[in-house]
Length: 84
Image 1 (cartoon, one colour):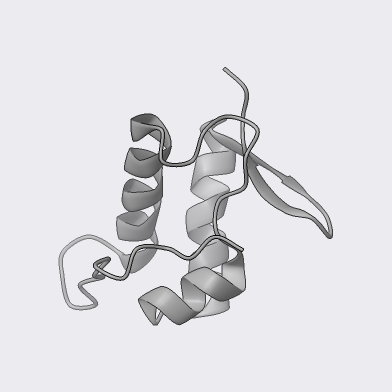
Image 2: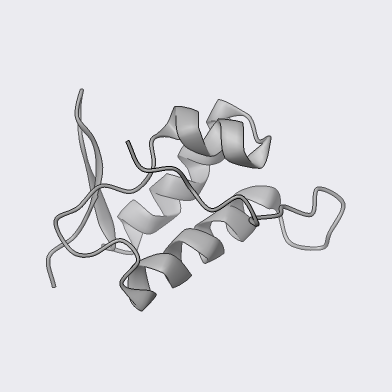
């Protein structure tokens, strides 16, 4: 299981919606190679635990990345970085 970095902070009162903040952080990690193509990103449950966000908020952030073509979801397996 991949544990997300503990330094991640979500500003719940900031101008940017929390789901967008999480999507931005995950996008940066994907682009930096922290999560290479074909490998999973942290699970919804792990991201909830590590960010303090609710499940729907985390899923919304992941959907942003799916819509951008950066990740894809395999039911029952997780969310994986798209091969470039």
